[in-house]
Amino acid sequence: MKKLSARRRHPLAAVVVLLLALAATGGLYAAFAPADKAQADETAQSLAIDEGKKLYAVGCSSCHGTGGQGSSDGPSLVGVGAAAVDFQVGTGRMPLQQQGAQAPKKKVIYSQAQIDQMAAYIASLGAGPNIPTEKQVSPEGADIAKGGELFRTNCAQCHNFTGEGGALTHGKYAPSLEGVSPKHVYEAMQTGPQNMPSFPDTTMPEKNKKDIIAYLDAVNGEKTESPGGLKLGGLGPVSEGLFAWIFGLGALIAVAVWVAARTAKAKKS
Image (cartoon, rainbow, N blue to C red; front, top):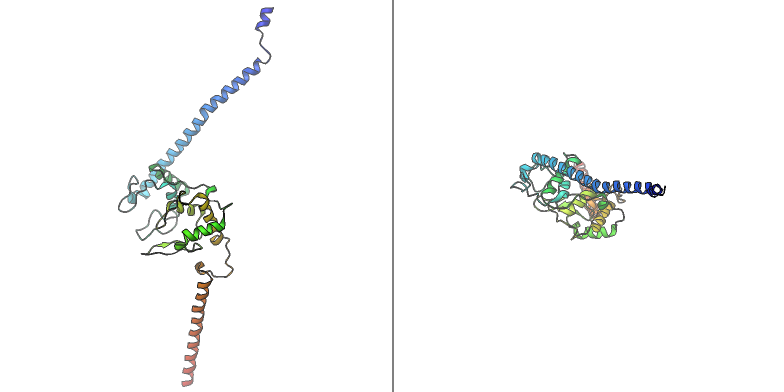
């Protein structure tokens, strides 16, 4: 009887065995699940790159080369990053319709999924700026006054101080920023498209980019009001007043001359 009692299991032994089993199961999950997820993400990325390569071959390779190395008709895309693709293709500037002083904004012919695939392929050719997240481009919590100061210092020379755009040399121009999405504004600052200089994070930190986006939304957004009526490209009260004086008085003078001429002609009759 003593021998049987010695072999009898402790009442908590089953609980311990169960906990060990659960721990082992959790350990196995921890060991294999992350690997499975990483493998799935890698597979999805590979598929996106493959599909992007096919789209690139059809719509882009004739100018930029079969491997993105560039040609006499288009620059190299190695190292431009996913952000450049998302901006250029997402605003319809690419594929280019015809060679000119610069690529104009036009109707987008690719879906966002296709743009993401092409961006993934170009990003695989060389490291470059990534497509910004919603948090990066959100104006929430930004300093609008600071954004205005930064915009007037770095951007107003070309885009006008409210982002209305303006003419440059040799047929080039700074496009209007009205209706441009915050994501594309951010990408433009990151990549420097067309004749625009680039402002990487080392030159203009992410916080400053958010401030500029918030300023543009305040002065040129959908909810922006113009109490003075026609804003004439946001040129300001002095130039707008001068416009009224020149054209307003000019019209009055023209009417006065016409009336005087008609009166003199009537008297001679």
